[in-house]
Amino acid sequence: MRFVDEFRDPELGRVLATEILAAVEPGRHYKFMEVCGGHTHSIYKYGIDDLLPANVELVHGPGCPVCVIPMGRVDDGIALAREPGVTLACFGDMLRVPGADGTLLDAKAQGADVRMVYSPLDALRIAKQEPDREVVFFAIGFETTAPSTALTLRRARAEGVRNFSCFCNHVTIVPPLRALMDSPDLRLDGFLGPGHVATVVGARPFEFIPRSYGRPVVISGFEPVDVLQSVLMILRQLDEGRCEVENQYRRVVPHEGNLKALEVMAEVFALRPHFEWRGLGFISQSGLRLSDDYADLDAERRFPVPGVRVADPKACQCGEVLKGVIKPWECKVFGTACTPERPIGTCMVSSEGACAAYYNYGRFARERELV
Ligand code: SF4
Image 1 (cartoon, rainbow, N blue to C red):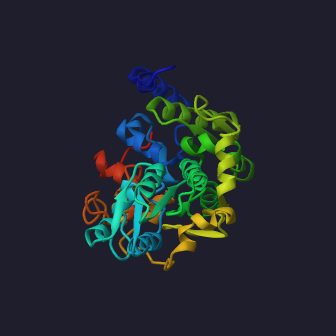
Image 2 (image 1 turned 60 degrees about the horizontal axis):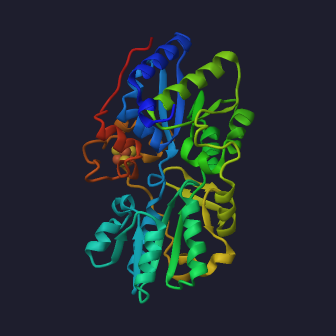
Image 3 (image 1 turned 60 degrees about the vertical axis):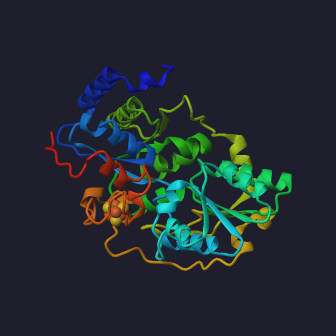
């Protein structure tokens, strides 16, 4: 197949759904986690879960970059934006993420110079156009977006742009997956592996899941046919007693990853000893900071950053959603006090967030009979 329409072909989807139905064992309940927020979005946009047998349950993992940012880091971003002479540049979704002291949008309304950008290069462009401002880029995301931040910092260095720095909140996907697998309150039968992250890191980093935890992984694309085929591939592994990492998204994901992207990341970033994740707490070696070679471009070393840890609001159950322990509609404030217009938690902010996907596609509850 060559064109995106072919990956959205309803007839092919129905054929795969029939094969999935034939592959499940009646009476057995299967629970698969899709790690990427992009998968969650596709599943509800295209109604993929309605094509699955009732005993195949998809739960949503911690792969939405905005959702995992803890409140304390939002407050740190706001503090940076309020520094005299600073322009804080960030992606649109981050503007609406609540910290303890409001959002970046609130800070902007109160006079802070906060600007929405579509890429780190946009932030660098602002720095070059306005040399009297200190431009800080609020970097978020997994290994998918970290290379573009790294390349931008490399370019800032090469071009001698001195009024540009990065507030680094990049995270890595393997440590939270390991934490989830070690969690006693979660039983999973397999994973739809994160196709976007795997584009950069390849398939190899996920081999610990079958090796250490005995669960199959299928790196999956994002179109409906991709997701259905990936579910079928996991079921076939289980049926045949196999347990390995398979790559359904081979048209994009090379087994070894993108070596050039990995190389620039290794040059620009270093692992933090630990990093806080919303709802998951501190996870060892799960966050990136700027390497010592790039210390002069590190906003956390250039400006005072409070670094205060802030507890999530009591009503917020984003942690349970991010761990796949509850479905979004099971959160007490889903669709009432917490909506995309007035989010309480991060999972309602980004379109990749599970709560936003459920809300936007009208999934207020889902009950089906087991086959
Ligand atoms: S409904 Fe809101 S508060 Fe509840 S889990 Fe979702 S985003 Fe968090």
